[in-house]
Image 1 (cartoon, rainbow, N blue to C red):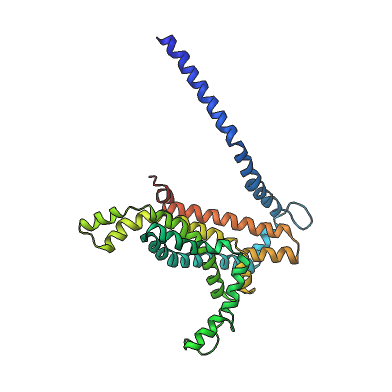
Image 2 (image 1 turned 180 degrees about the vertical axis):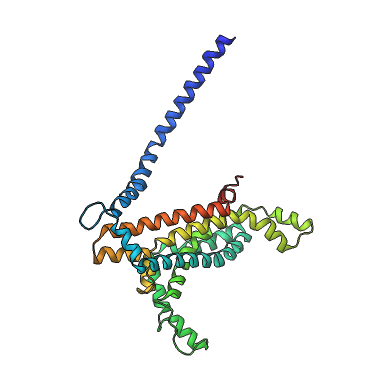
Length: 295
């Protein structure tokens, strides 16, 4: 009996190893693609950040960032815009996603098309549309003056206000999509059961609906925040050179100085800072348990 069991266990072990190699072989193209698309460019970025003007290994690019306060101001503006845009998207997107989740499936699907509509138009076109609407002689100022909201045109572009309006409009679908998906999976019977047990609608919302929809909210917020960090077109057009983010600064360095080392150092510092922030947020907010339900 023991002699029969030993060959069987050996055969199962060999079969398991064979399956693992087959899975690895099937996944190999994806692994190589990830290495080629992500790891190699990031590694090259790190390498260039340590190359000085003379082509030798140097820390001059990082020393320049410490010496000049303008770099710190650029990073501050970048994170300020990213955080404020994320908050605006949450304030606008959560009620909208909740409204869509309460509608019948067909009606919600039709209305969801209006949320997805920005994906079907050019980013540059949408940004310049906001420029036309928000400028001093734009439609919004003319309408506000006509109805008496204010008497003289208000400056809504080439400042932080215009940048946040444009960024929130562009980033809103990235928050609504995962949030709506999370809300749609919540069974209405759960809210009805809470009501039958004596819970008020507000209590049922905060104790049942909101915790279940939280993974979608956190996922959408992280997507919006990370995308905002490296955004270029909208801050450059609606900011008018007054709202200088990292991407704008990198472009200016490459166009004016053609200094790949300095531009790469900016990208490296932003990448490392973002990873540290996400790591600390994950530890403090326990993102694993929120997103995946793990303990």
